[in-house]
Amino acid sequence: MAVRPLLARLNAHGRYAYRAPDVRVDHLVIGAGIVGLAVANALARRWPDKTTYVVERHPQPGQETSSRNSEVIHAGLYYPANSLKTRFCLRGRELLYARTEREPIGARQVGKLVVGRTPEDAAYLEKLHHHSTRLGPDAPPTTLLTGDEARELEPDLAPEITRALHSPRTGIVSAHEFMAQLEMELDTLPSGETPDAQVVYGTSAVRIDPDPAGWVVQTRTHDAAHAGDTDALLAQVVINASGLNAPRALNALVHALRGPDAAMVPMYFAKGSYASYRGPGVGRVRRLLYPTPNFGAGKGGTHAHHSLGTHLTLDLEGNVRFGPDAEWLVPPPADADALDESGYEHDFWETQLYPDATDAWFAAMHAAIQQYLPGVERTGLAPDYSGIRPKLAGPDAKTFSDFALLWHASRDLGQQHVWQRTLPDTGGGALVSLLGIESPGLTSSLALAEHVAEELAARVWGAHNPRGRAQRYVEHVGHDSLAGWA
Image (tube, rainbow, N blue to C red):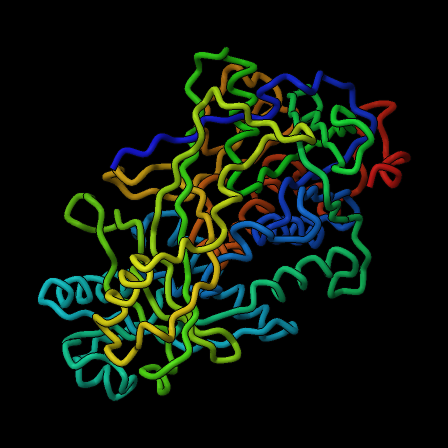
């Protein structure tokens, strides 16, 4: 299946000319999804006296990927041992559970069964079990079960289930309560301190330029009188956590420095749709139920899967949801007019946030569910919602696609690589772009934030500045006008 990627960048139409900065900030986070809020939270905790500002184009946090997923706390079973997904999922899982124990966030460790029917499924589950035992101190505990043992835990499972893997460390969490708690702490930290931090909604980053002292980021408030009206901020550190749009900022720099023929970071979009369920066949289900994954063409049939199958998840009220399926979206042609009436680049995927609930869709989902829960009836399924995952590789990829954390310095940018994994020691400002943060992004969010803060402490601010004493790294651009901008 050939799916063309979207190759897009900020300010592709040249609507926004360069502007000298009006105000300065220490940290500017682009995107108030779970990852962006977690990073801002970590920075505010570590440097409460530094300015940490978040810009979010929507009127509320997490309106894209963060609010349209399974809300699962993943144990960390599926990914290669040396991958960033495994590293941050394992650490993030423990950080998230610890936070839910001390903060008013709805969460529950319900456990999960991965179930299989065939000898190939059984071999996969055994391999998954052995893989999980070799993941270090935070390795998720797992137990291999026979079909009968699995049915003792979940009596509604099909008699054809011959093997299962029990993962007791898997759980569920309210993503909205999690985000609300992260944002609340930007007003008042658990210590009682008031950090210099704030989220600014209804505001988009529309242009980014390197500067010897940092990054000049232009933002546009959506209720501005004219589409071209912007504010310009000089940020020492920019955290690009804009999810589905994260490659756009990086591609703008690639284009500016290397010309229109330079290879841009591709953007793929995978739609996953969910169905709610009310009916027989699930009345005794107490755990999440996952079939064995659907594999791509990866070497040896492992770690290249694009979907974990149509699984059953529960919310905190015990409601049952099935999904997601996987559908690759095709972006509009590169030369299509991508501006809406307000002058913003249109996100074609915004029309795909609900299931295309055709008879064929219901039939396919019901057939997948019947493989492990035969008592589920087609008439009990109803369309729920869809989410879009940011992908760095398309459906034909033959290798595992990991998270990408790319670091760039604002000085000597032309000498740096696009896919640069560490911050070069050239001085200036730091830009970290978090790309391809799909599942297990929610589980990994606190660990990703912890890592970004540690890297900034080591490579930008230094141990001599532990609390964030103000550093005037640019003359005549100060904090005085920041409150007016926010």
